[in-house]
Image (cartoon, rainbow, N blue to C red):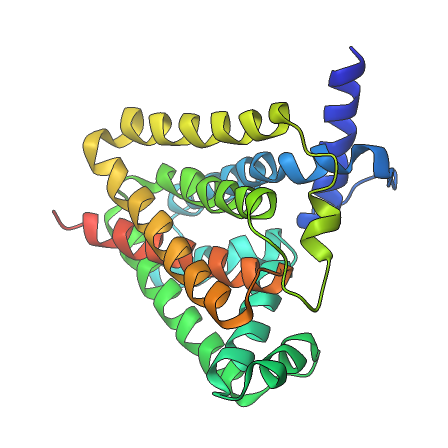
Amino acid sequence: MRHFVSWFKGFYMSLGMFCKIPMPFPLWEEAHMPWMISTLPVVGIVIGGIWWLLGLLFARIGMPLMLRGALLALAPFFIAGFIHLDGYMDTSDAVLSCRPTADKVRILFDSCIGAFAAIMLGILFLLQFAAMYSVGEYGRYLGLVLPIVVVSRCFATLSIFFLPSIPESDYTVILARNIGIRHKLFVVTILAASIVFSVLYAGVWGLIPIGAVILGYVCVTAYVFKEFKGIFGDLLGCAMVIGELCGLIALAMLQGR
């Protein structure tokens, strides 16, 4: 019972931090931080589930296709409170500046929006809209948005567990403090369950968007890790956003098969 209470409080904290769903009672206890990080994929289940239900609702009420695609493209960012999108923009500014590492780190911590962030945000929204427009048009495998969101968060959580933080910050070191084997096994179990769900829902085709998420996430993480000699919250947010976009593009390409 004690472990369940700790898990629930950690999940409640994770919802409050990584999701925009209003939480009636503020809660922050450092003792439950390991579960706060470990339940990030469960927050993904909530976000992905709402996203899926919105897609079904929009189709049910006969919403115009273009409007449906636009709202579905923006939905996950609104539900998550734009927290990971912020990391995508900051990382875009830093990486595309083509400056020395020290300057890139300074740009990464700068809250101002630069030209590269604005450009990359436009590219992201254009591709995300095109993908969700295609999914809305054909209506196939819409439920795969759920594991796409969950898998990206599983990999972000595992990155916090196993990869070092950038030298200029101990952000992930603090988050990974007191992480035990049960926390790691929990995340791996959620990851495995997401893959199984994808196969049961869409057959072998369900593995394609999931594989695209993993490939996109790993490539971005490997690149920023090489650039910054570690990971940081904004860098992980960028990897999640791009990984999910890769998954959605793969899902859109499945629509016409």
